[in-house]
Length: 347
Figure 1 (spheres, helix red, strand yellow):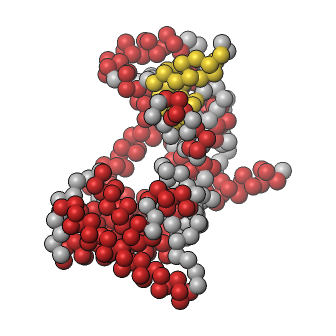
Figure 2 (cartoon, helix red, strand yellow; figure 1 turned 135 degrees about the vertical axis):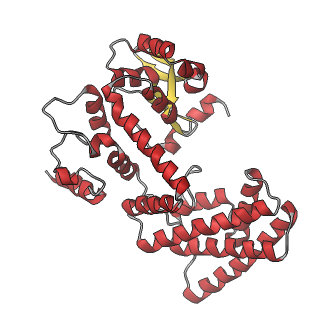
C-alpha cells in the first residue's frame, strides 16, 4: 500500500487519540495513526522561535536521537502557507522520544508521565494482577457494566490459556494464531474476525471483543475453552490437527448458540457495539486524568504558558484551574468531568 492509499484512510480512523489537538500543531492521519509536524511540536514544547534550527541543534546534542532519525521522521504532505508540502512528521511514540531530549519545563509533564508509565509496566511484570486491575479500572471509567467487565476479564484469561495451548502444540505465533482464531470465529459464529467487525460497524484497528455483549463474550470463552480441552485431549500436534480440533469446538459452540436462540427468540451475535463508551471524548478524559500536568500541578499566579494554552485548547481543560487539592488525584472522576462539561454547555 502506497502513502497516498494510506493517507486516504484518514476518515476511517478519526477515532484515534490525538496527543496534540491545538491549531498550532499540524497533523495528518497516515497508516491509521496520527503524525505531527516535528517543527510545530518542538516550537510549542521548547518555546523556540526558530524550531528548524532547534531541531538541528537537538540532533547535534543527542547522538542517539540523530542515529535513529530515519525511523523517527516521516515526510508527509501538510498544508503550509506556500501550499501542500512534504514536512517531517512523527507519530506519538516518536514525538515523545523527541520531547525527552528537549531541556524545557514545558516537557516535564510528559517526561514524568513516561516515567510513571514505565514504572507501572515494571510493576505489572512483577505482579501481573496489577495489569488486570488497571484494565478493569479503564473499562469502568469508560462506563462498561460490572457484568461486562468481569466477563471480559474472564475472556482474557481463557484467551491466554488457549494461546499457550497452541504454542505447546507446535503453532507459531502471528500468522498461524490469526488463521486459527478466524477458524474459531467462523465455525462458532459464521464470521471471520474482519467480517464480525464489519457486522458490528467497527474499524479494522478496533478490538472486536471490546465491542461484544456479555453473551457474545461468554460464547467466545466457551469456544476457546472447548478448543483448549479438545486440543489437549486429542493430543493434536501441528497446524492441521489443531485446526480440526478448533473446528469441532466451534461446531459445538454453534449448536449451543442455535439452541439458545431458539429458546429465547433472540440473536446472540448482534450489531451492538460499545462506540458510545469508547468515544474520543472519553479517551481524552482518561489521558487528561493520567497526565501529571493536570493531577499534580502546583497552583501559582503565573499565566498559562503557550504549551499549556495549546493543551487547554486541544483537550478543553485548564491545567491551572482552581480545583480543590483533594480532587487533584485519580479520585477526580470522569463523572465529575462530564457533569462539569454538561453544566458549561447549559450556560
